[in-house]
Amino acid sequence: MTIQPHPDRVIIFDTTLRDGEQCPGATLNVDEKLVIARQLARLGVDVIEAGFAIASSGDFEAVQRIAETVGTENGPIICSLARSVKADIEAAAKALKPAAHPRIHTFIATSDIHLKYKLKKTRQEVLDITSEMVAYAKSLCQDIEFSPEDAGRSDPEFLYQVLERAIAAGATTVNIPDTVGYTTPSEFGGLIRGIKENVPNIDQAIISVHGHNDLGLAVANFLEAVKNGARQLECTINGIGERAGNAALEELVMALHVRRQIL
Ligand SMILES: [Zn+2]
Image 1 (cartoon, rainbow, N blue to C red):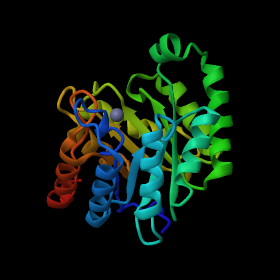
Image 2 (cartoon, protein in one colour):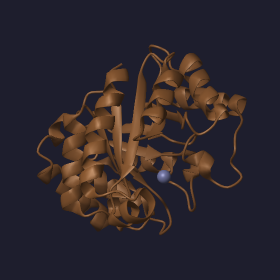
Image 3 (cartoon, helix red, strand yellow):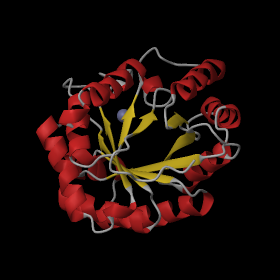
């Protein structure tokens, strides 16, 4: 199963087992994760983000066992998160090895506030790391997703450059996260439209979105994103996730189905 960009196809990417698990009190053991992953596959989600392989041995094992048992030829894509550093990418590739359709999801922050206080890197350094680490991930796995963390608060001109680099280095999906749940629907839709209009090689990648409910707007933001060209939605069951949670899978799917004529 290779997912091709199609104007009418919206890819459902479930991150219950990764972002959802970052919700206070939602810690799951490997067996519980396997049960959920099987149910997600039965539900027909396109991509399961199974964990963050480098984060702990439990996470590594969960990604590996889900890759083995749920990541079958006719099953979903199995994905592991990885920072844009070699050790993370290697751990993700190793854990995903048994999957028929593996995906490495690598990220680096692009907002000035993250560059200055978290990464302590210049914009030029972030551009270079993006090219280098996406290319490295691509050498280990064909299906690469790249996220510019805190995209919602990034300078759009810089964001366009980072995305162009990621796609040129082999990213097949570029995910735009509203990491802190700060944007409104019109702003988020505008951000996606800007990316479509200003990233020269954007037609070679699927635009994905990731959002949080700090202002209760994740689903509304995603519907605007779809109108403006996003074709992958990152969501969780019941919207569980960090802080106020993520976009809820069931709300998104039903909104897209019931109100498809207005989208
Ligand atoms: Zn998140």
